Image (tube, rainbow, N blue to C red):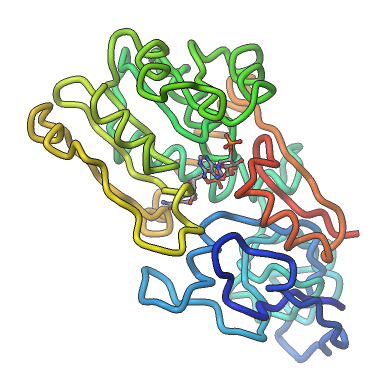
Amino acid sequence: NREIHLLNRPQGMPVKADFNLVSKPVPVLEEGQVLIKNLWLSVDPYMRGRMVERASYVEPFALNTVLSGGAVGEVVESRHPQFPVGSKVSSMNGWREYFTSEGNDLQLLPKTEIADQAFLSVLGMTGMTAYTGLLKIAELKEGDRVFVSAASGAVGAIVCQIAKLKGCYVAGSVGSDEKARYLLDELRVDAVVNYKTSEDLQTSIAEACPEGIDVYFENVGGDHLEAVLNLMNDHGRIAVCGMIGQYNATSAQPGPANLAQIVIKKLKIQGFIVFEHWDGYPEFVEQMMQWIAAGKISWKETVFEGIEQTPEAFIGLFNGHNLGKMLVKLT
Ligand code: NDP
């Protein structure tokens, strides 16, 4: 039974030495408990924020204790009537192979043909983030011209597809030509910018969005936000989901120099944290399952194998190593 601990608070880009693989005995079950064997772990960019000692919307991770993250597992022993052996559950008790629970921190997965690990991506937190940010925060309307940054990732690729099926023009930015081809050929988005090879980001985004931008789904921040502010249409909406371009910064980053565009264009800019919207999860799952069954939404996974690979998978998020959802499969 192995688990990953945070050993040091990363300075800049996290490195493998910031994490520690620790072996422990498999916990012994008490009455009213279940023993879960995790099958899939989720690594997510927001976890970088929890590695820093500062006040935020969620407590920082403690050093030398197991990192908690999204996970899907199977009940392998049970002394709890609601969770028979063989049940599949999702939890936030990841980055470990086994754990015991009294059930209140577990969600039973519904019986479906869809693979279990989809409840960590398209049917889980990242899918819910895409749905909430686009439809509730940015109040997407049919015909909107939409721009998405980190567009081939777990959240971004679902944003692109929801916007397409709502009848919008959709463009996105990515960090490789392979990712650009995926968006154009498989997801049928209208235009893509490779921000790593673009000579001038604003010019490239302007070419990708010839009629301007009504809705920006912000995942990156920094120069992306500054470029997009200049290209927003009047009364545009920006859902600020994340700013991954800044998560490893070691000093304060300059803000966009053109914030006056918010006034000039009469923009609405709103940040959100998906966990505050979790009462909408049943509605989301029902809708997403319908879209999946109708072949309207697809998704990709990038999979590392073995718990010892979890830090590398996590670090890979900040190097663009993933297409779709980054996951760790436990063997
Ligand atoms: P992704 O699957 O999108 O993985 C991260 C991707 O970000 C990478 O593959 C990489 O793609 C891109 N990236 C990494 N570093 C940079 C950089 N410096 N500049 C530009 N792009 C970069 O992760 P998620 O879909 O899980 O998360 C996407 C965003 O959504 C993050 O900002 C995350 O914090 C946020 N989020 C917010 C939530 C909320 O409740 N507000 C909930 C969940 C996620 P590429 O190769 O294209 O550069």
